[in-house]
Length: 417
Ligand code: UD1
Image 1 (spheres, helix red, strand yellow):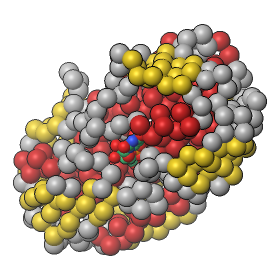
Image 2: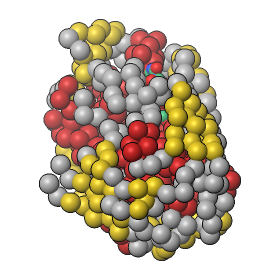
Image 3: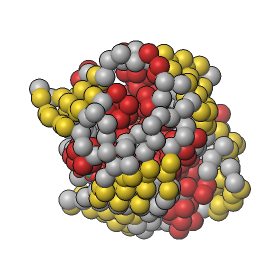
């Protein structure tokens, strides 16, 4: 397995181009199943999770071409409605083929994703919503089996804000017979990006960007071309790279308007921010100040930025409390950061971080994508070599992280196994 060797690299400077958002691209690829026409997606990041999903669609009989960040999906020849365990277990997001399959073909057999490194992560809300739309669902031998002649519009109130749950049900509702109301919907920009693409494909959706989506089902959708929204989490991660190294980075092809809660915290930490419609400049000229964070659904502070801000807090001036309210087990980076000299105490979903003067390089690893990113960030300010193992987690969500960081002056290299 590849590793990254990270060395102290203060004062990162230059431009980083932000890629399309993984979490937007994944549901958009699934939306390709909703039509027999071609769906063309641009600005698709080259990531392991995306190729896994392309493989899944290919296995169902769809034609998928992916080159130069452009994906063409032709689901006109789909002849299997199954998402097998082997693929779903490597990527939970593949459960999002469930809604499109049952909506367009009237049947689906999708492996239950099971737990993952950051918690149990059930899919009960996805199932409840489809049942309310009239699908007959059984769980057999670890698979969700769904059937419906045609889904029917329904009022669905989700018990908690779920991003992929909202996306799955939205994709089901666009082809249902009648009006579906999705209440307590996730408002993440990635949900909005999916809704915008579905509208281009002929869907009728009102309330886009709010917590109540009202969908009037149509008989069929047609092809469209859509560019994936910029990745606010990738941009946030590189913003922390600027802050932690006391550098000055300009993030191009970004969407600062989707990063409000992240930008507020960067300013509290002492960063100087400048931005335009599609760029964000983050500069830090002193030791960062500790910032308290509490993860919550959008537009509040994202759980996917918790580990990176934790890395910043480890070397900041002062103490900070972090409250993780979305996932029950999302502190896997804590023991690894402590091995690098950080001072962090965890109590349930709270973590108290006392800033230290110095971190020390160590061999570390994480079992989650964002946790791995936090270790790379810590490595940029640690004395000595930091070896981040299990880089495949990073490859799931960051397009060429070591390449992008090296271009702005970081000493980061990939060591091939
Ligand atoms: C998505 C993101 C992930 C991000 C997360 C929270 C994708 C591909 N992944 O994950 O990067 O960290 O949102 O912003 O977009 N829950 C249930 N039952 C359900 C569904 C969810 O109990 O049926 C719970 C989960 O266990 C979790 C919370 O709801 O505690 C939020 O999870 P959810 O928003 O669904 O996360 P994902 O969509 O899986």
